[in-house]
Image 1 (spheres, rainbow, N blue to C red):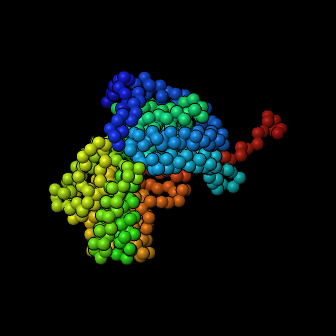
Image 2 (cartoon, rainbow, N blue to C red):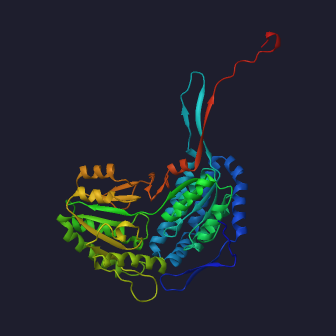
Length: 469
């Protein structure tokens, strides 16, 4: 398939709060796309030969450059996506921390010494893969991008980076700040939409597709990679479940579920998408969850923001309408409000069934569909029966139940008694429709390098003519 781009078509983003124009960014032309890949390919040999300690030092400097412009990036993010100011700044700070983490991890990313035959030496050496095509999302644009970019760059790869067309100015500014510090061609930004991404996939000379975003796009990358043989790292959609056990405080559990379902207006890859609550505490739990939802819906805009745009809001509403049409009950919310912007109320649905779209697909909005179960076994079985495999949460005081969940849930991350959180050095592998490969943490350095095993034996002494040595 051949993609044609028109350079005069700008990317225009509407502020989801007031409907004004948030940003206008020139979309890359076909020539821009070809030039970006050529620049990254041309810079790859020299950057691969750069000492890891020097790469780490430059990444430290890049992190400092982002730190100096943290508020600017946060403001751009808020304007383009509606992310509330505190969360937007927190995302930038998280991105800075990730860059620093990889700046420290890169120089100590080591191979392995192997034990072979006596008198020989065996070892494994990591090498950069080459050129990484990084495709990153809009919902936390700086934090997510810094993870992939930091790991790829410090591992010795060069990067062509295209962010989402929903946050183009934020990503363009981030790319510019990082590129100011790095050698030319190590990081090349490309501004564009889905057609731009397709054209990038057509380019020769890309060794890795690293993607965070929708499952449909991740599937497309994997299809193309069969032909191009690029290595694929993808963290895609999720349909994360929460199991609420009978032995927990229902008010506390409702606060946890509300945080997971409504934070960033439900626009987080690991947002809570399905809730299975034990019948013994279902009534007080639902009442407390409704109160949590209503508190958020009436909160100031600085605390509870809009959905990113009308396209997503229509999708969210269609999922809710499907549930209501099949017998679900909206305990609060469930309808698109009038007025400017793309706000949507925090919504609690009950009487849901497993065939409803809110239970089978990632809604990516502030929807908490609640199903009552008779026991922990039923909740565990239903939570596991899903094509996605990103994460899941168990709220319980029963250690045995927690251990069973960790052993039986087919997901990359199991969280117990906290919907968010985790050690900074953690790495996880999503399953099924949620992707493949380590998308973050120290193990991402392994994904973005290849390994050469070396076997060395001493050569026999050279014997000169006549027997002399």
